[in-house]
Image (cartoon, rainbow, N blue to C red; front, side, top):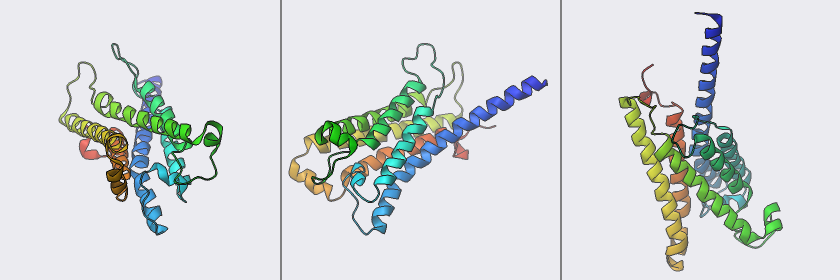
Length: 237
């Protein structure tokens, strides 16, 4: 085998390993975020916040913003597979949209629990407008992750036959996508449909935090599987 061929193989191998590292990093960050926030609340002997976004106004603000911004940067840097013929949206467009949405969600905060000092974006555009942008960005973030799980990840190379491992991975991807949709639907129902008294009662149990955690954990699991972090699900060789 020629030296040129060896170099090409090594370059391809390095690219594949880089992709796997990005996917695994996204998976770890997704799984870790809710757990780290809960551990921080436990260490400070305070109850969990009603939502993940509400941790922006606690001592865990740096943890919340830093982790979510890191997820956004990793997603924005992720190119994925090139756009295939007939494909409407590529991995690159989905990942960059999700990445920007994650960064906006991290930097533009939700409504504060009480009037107080405003953040940069709240001072510039107003507290309520900033909150609407935050909620919209979070919805786009979850929606793009659901598209990855339900549409992009289950795809098989054209003309290829999915292996038994690939079929198992696809079931996990679709399960994670459904979990993301359930989380989004639950949050919308809580915010828009439920009576205020029932909503306040559920907030004592941090129901939105649990729904958000479900979605973020589904995101984390799907990207760990895509990053081949679970050997039993990987194709032979």
